[in-house]
Structure formats: structure tokens, C-alpha cells
Image 1 (tube, one colour):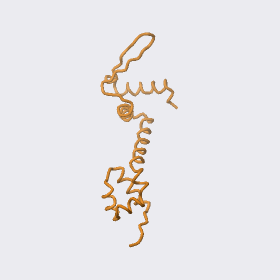
Image 2 (image 1 turned 45 degrees about the horizontal axis):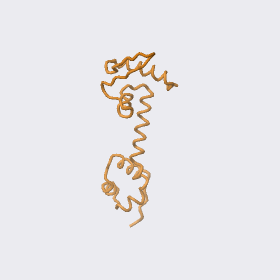
Image 3 (image 1 turned 90 degrees about the horizontal axis):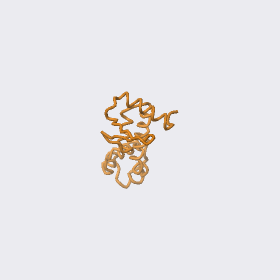
Image 4 (image 1 turned 135 degrees about the horizontal axis):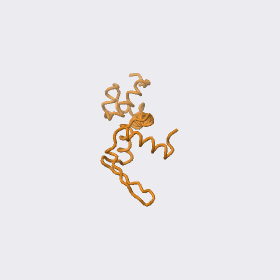
Length: 125
């Protein structure tokens, strides 16, 4: 039997299957190779497939946020910044405190507030 020579397409297939959580035994079977051959020739794809897929998704999410996508921004804030539905934020200003319930804002009001906050924190380019 000739030695296995992975193609770029096969490497990509392994990377995608790993990212999707496909067991290594199924990946090897899909390629028509044994587990040892899979491990030997596709070690990098097996190790980094999930991380590379996550990086691509995060890059796309950031692009959407930078383009002003309110759903993408809300998703990020909920999953990465600890925001929750119905969360109120207290803002202290000259010894006064006011609580704001952001759930009562319209989509446009939230978008306007996002722009103002980005301007204040210097993230606007």
C-alpha cells in the first residue's frame, strides 16, 4: 500500500471535522486511513482545528460589532462581558447615583448610546 500523502483539501476537511466535534475515529474512517496515519499526518489539524474555527468566528463577530450590529454587540456583552437581561447600571456623578434600565431602551436608543459610549472611551476611529 502506498504511503499516505495528505492533500490541502484533506487537511481542510480534518480541520473542519475537528472544529465540529467529529470523533477522530470517524475522521480517519472518512479519509480511508487508520488512526496512526491520522495522528502522524494530521497532528496540527487535530490539535488546532477547533481554535482556528473559533478565531474565524470571533473575527467575524468583531467585524459585525464594528459595523454597528446591535445583536452582535449584545451577544458579546452577554457572553464575554457578563451582561444579563434586565441588568441595571449605576452611574455615579457628582455624589449622585442614577440607575438606568437598558432593557427599556429601543433598538435605536441602544445604538445611539453605544455610539456615545464608544466616543467617550475612545474606541471610535
